[in-house]
Image (cartoon, rainbow over all chains, first blue to last red; front, side, top):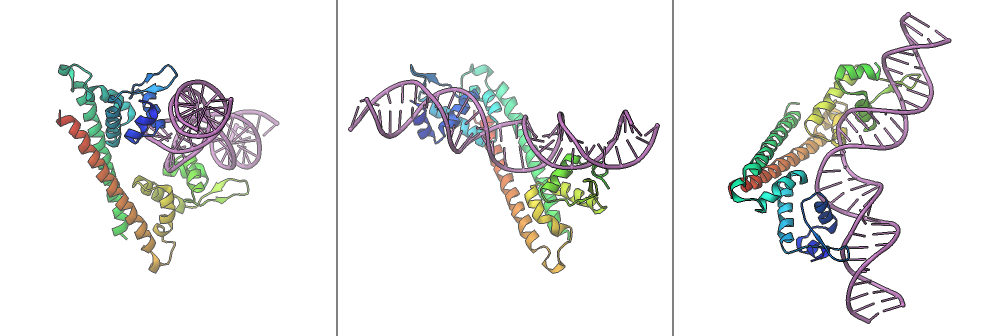
Length: 114
Length: 114
DNA sequence: TTTGACCTTGCCATCGATGTCAGCCCCTAA
DNA sequence: TTAGGGGCTGACATCGATGGCAAGGTCAAA
């Protein structure tokens, strides 16, 4: 399918689909004219990308994680790398949550102290 | 005092002090030469700005909040506006924390599900 | 008087996902 | 053949706190 259809079917702008490709997240064939052509799997891939972005991962991290998520690696070495990466992200998120909570506490202090 | 001294005494770069002034957070007189001149209060103000920034507020919000924090308004109307603003910020922070927690949960799903 | 430290303004860069626009190519239906 | 709807690339803008640099003015000490 062409980029317009993929955009319509995923709700992601064509601009972003090209961006994901530039970031190495999404593959696209090319027609005899230069048009990108996507197969059905692309719809799934785009949804996975959106989910991972929504989970707060950067495109850089997603680029590492995606081949594992898509099951493109031999089963037995699955997860090892992925697990490390995601665990690192989880730790970073926990840190961010803690920071936010500390900030929230500091801010609440401005409200109650005076 | 000149900007360099204020910078040294607060640990905030001169570049940032000028930025805070441009954002309407920090007042400075001007000497006969164009040099900025600060009074002692500036040290306190800068610390307050840093504390509020550290609490996650934007310079825009701080601009609204600061006159209240500095007690430059009549006592009886104190807090009303400030309270609203800070409470809005607290709610926004709670929302951000919730988002992060949801994201964290989604991410953890990628780890445990397979 | 010269040197050197300090000040001024103004502009550019950062980071990352995303929007938007210009200029041009391709294809199909009327 | 033409109009219109795709698609292509490349470039620029956004947001916000901050860093950094350049060109030039000011002042004090040597």
